[in-house]
Image (cartoon, rainbow, N blue to C red; front, side, top):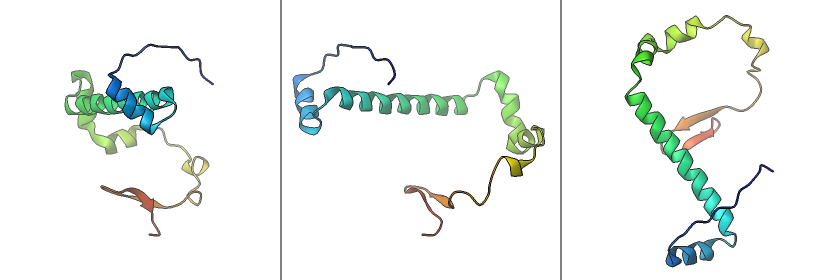
Length: 102
């Protein structure tokens, strides 16, 4: 288990009562909420970065994915990936990843 630290957080009493109705372990609830918020903020930051790239990276962005992929070293992909492993999935907006068989 990773090291932990004790912190004191002050929250309105009404909010504490709502948490207690949903979860016996307040720390577990707060941990889950904090993790979700950090993920949300990282995504926002990435989106802002993609919408306003740093001037030094604009040149790379203008090259495009195909040029970037061609610039990668040639490797024997059959050693890196087994195309018969795993399962086929596809992305459906609003639903997420689903099995290709559905």
